[in-house]
Length: 379
Image 1 (spheres, rainbow, N blue to C red):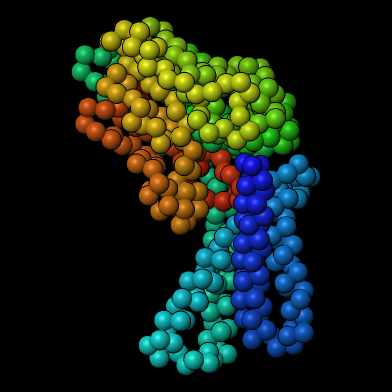
Image 2: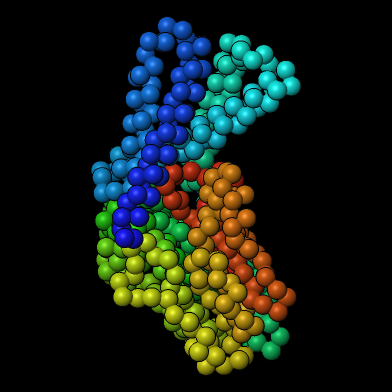
């Protein structure tokens, strides 16, 4: 029964998705024909192009050649902004009609002006987002441990959401590692979604592995599994991390140099599952620790912050991408108590740092968010 319901929901989703593309195609061709009347008889060509764009987005999530993934990824960004700006334009024109700023029969000049504004805005946002996504930013936080806890005096360098296998994901690896090493980290934490659902989507596994092997941290590199780090190629993902000298904490706690307890959680909603692994409480493991040890928890998705009490000093998370592209940042701020940056749910609770991630999911763009490396001075 569940499988039938899933199929039905997928069909409904795809139908709505295609209808939205028809709406965009209609709005686009209306403005284009107003500007170039000779194109009136060629509307079908533009409808076909937009529907091909919709198909390219859908197939890009499957095992297809890389160039098709690239087309689909950028088509997704174009779709989002065409939809956003055409809807906004239609609402504004409707309001203008209501107050009689524009006659009921919209003048050709207004149609052309609106079309031109939407096209320029969409192109600008897509171009900016594509360039900005490749510019790695560095963010720094200083975390003071609770009273009665020994100061570890450690520097943690943290990244999340690398999304290896996604479009453009491998281009930033060398720079990422060089800039992480430049911080002289004591510990490097990779807080989930190192992969993008399918290990086989990585174009150059050897080069990616070599890049991670170059990370230089005094006490090593630790990681947790995010929601995109599972599925049919889960075993290959684990093998890659082991060969890259990345220690994966699967609802486990490790003590580093007798100065810091580092806990790593399994994500509760892995796409395709983590084999036989499932998330379980680690409270008993935390209770067994020396009370004077500072405790840092890596938990990919920041919607389980209430699980941790006063015995945890810091939670580090990713997942949200800070919405990745505008207006997604406003959506994540509504969904998560802390969707980005530094926060604390209650005065005596753990401090929290949520990263917007260094990679991208779907469209290789960032608008209103940064690709970032986070440095945490833990005092």
